[in-house]
Image (cartoon, rainbow, N blue to C red):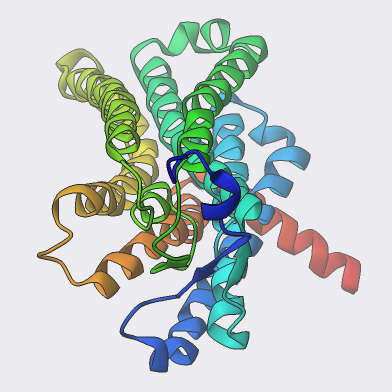
Length: 319
């Protein structure tokens, strides 16, 4: 019987996540910025969700999409950072085989969800600026709910095959993963089987999906800029465009480390040091959840006003 068919002999009970290879002696120091950013991400995103739920002035489509983004960010970073901190602080490197697959599913599902929500937010800004009088009629609560559900289902359906493609592989080379979490290609690369199908499917999912989202974002902002520079709506368009600055920052924070991580896995493995790749891969899942609440809190007037009102109410309660 061939090795890849004898799954009971080659499928490990658990993997060992090795943290950041080459920087094991610095794990303790690296953990402090990771932990600090994670606390900021959890507090910031939970705060945004609370404000959007309980502030009537934020019950609009833009903020509903922002709530989706915050929830996505919370799940995305919570799928990886607690385990990474356990590796850094307590040297708890073991992760069960099925637990690894579950972590992989959550990571890739919610990174795909992140891209989809950013695309929906760009379309929302396009409708708000280019069709302001029809904004509330076009983006009703039902449309928002359907768009969010479709984005989630798209991510789930595309990621489910990752788990089966990874589970079928034989792992007779060992079970040490040079990473802080179970990324699809990081797990596949330690297999002694043929991972070409995994690599091709990863490209088939990531490139068309990412390209579609980026195309929609680009088209939306092209139309927004066209409206802003139009003489007939210059003043109104420029004021409206100022509300897009936070979203543009969120797009940059998300996509730059995402593309670096994706292409390094496939084409830069021999030119970029492994520890640099792992650190950027961690920041890819940690920076957007950390920075998005800060950026939106600073750049969005309605959120700033809501935070001030909340703090004033809290002070009045205490006095």
